Image (cartoon, rainbow, N blue to C red):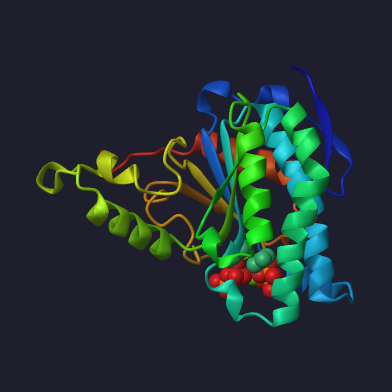
Length: 250
Ligand code: IPE
Ligand code: IPE
Ligand code: MG
């Protein structure tokens, strides 16, 4: 498919057809960071940065789908983000509801399959219902798997998985494999994470997909999430294609 897009400030078309489809990451995970600093730089409140970040997310989801990436996972709210001022937390939670209300129909039409990972019991019943309804609506869609990590922490996920396993009377502990254990993780069924992208210059995982990213390639940019462009996403995909993944071999 020939699709020219305009990326970044350069306003030059980028051709997505020269991306080697054989070397595409199956699963891209994004730590959408830098909303607050972006807002500060614009003389705005941090919350305005989160609102701007939603727009970037829409663009990147559309692009990932067009390129033919199987799964996109985005870090929207960590188990540590409750430490932020109440007004900011409340704003982020209301943004989830608003996003679902506004974007669901279009995503469904594009055959997106939405999924939430993280401990959703931390959210209001209303938001939990909105999440469950969105998942239910799109569960049979065959398009991109779009996972939103909300109240997500890698350690929390592994601990919850361990608890599920401990309660599973059918589990044979002695012969349990890594593949068996993955069945208890929130991400069960998703392809392995190939590429982790982090924006705004930070070079840490911040408790994101600790198990799943064990052998992912890492790519980062100094650009804050609201300014993250299609051009940069493609740059990351192309750089991934050129990497030599050894998985411990030679
Ligand atoms: C990422 O942007 C969004 C969330 C964590 C929800 P930040 O809010 O962390 O922005 P900075 O890192 O403070 O600039
Ligand atoms: C990670 O970003 C969480 C999300 C992007 C949702 P943070 O901004 O919360 O991470 P730290 O505090 O810089 O590690
Ligand atoms: Mg941050």
